Image 1 (cartoon, helix red, strand yellow):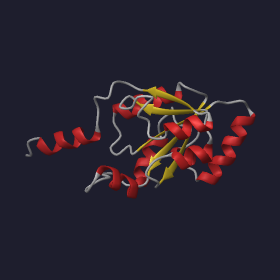
Image 2 (cartoon, one colour; image 1 turned 180 degrees about the horizontal axis):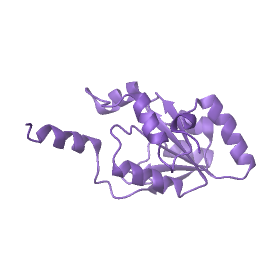
Image 3 (cartoon, one colour; image 1 turned 90 degrees about the vertical axis):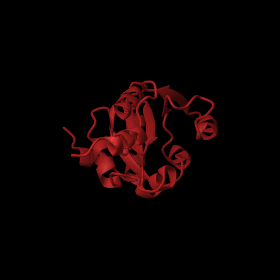
Length: 163
């Protein structure tokens, strides 16, 4: 059985491994996110993504990009903790860290068959939609209704009575 740590790879290693999976005829799915304080919505999103192909690669935002996207005080968990948590999920085959503001470069580099996004997007609002279309990557909207968020979880913790 593979360990979580063995699933976390660099882009160069990942590109080589994906080439081997392609030779075996496997369909590669790519998903991404910050995954700051992993919650049930993340698990359902990644399970939904995995169901779109044979292999799931997850891009996890580096600390610098989480801060830029989410604002001061974020991330709660550092990139090492977040990549290990995501890699520990059964549905995930590989995890790669990225610092860019979106995953266009990763889509260009990895060339997955499917780019999975959560239900907070539509086919028309996926930020990397044009790049995916140009590369022939199918976009799939997966997971449950977006009623889980790290922001709301943190807010409920802040409001909870303290003993």
